[in-house]
Image 1 (cartoon, rainbow, N blue to C red):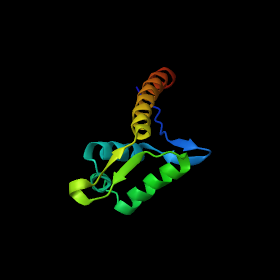
Image 2: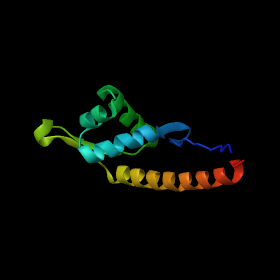
Image 3: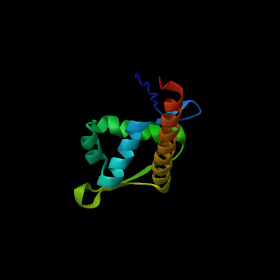
Length: 113
């Protein structure tokens, strides 16, 4: 029996402009866990320049601030998520979980041969 399965990819836009997708969610999770943009970039295999550009693009296109970076080197510096960043991360993951459950259920109903 062949079983077809539906897959989906989700991202967030504001006024038709890209804000964040799965890669960016992974970036926010890494920043939250590691407390550093540089360490998060290394963890993901992204260049620091690409990472910083991604974050600035998110904030510019959304009109919201998702991170707060403190300068001062390893001893005093670091990065953390703003309350908006924490909410975005939490709500995106909750939405993704619900979406995956729905897509999986509907996929089984429609594409089981």
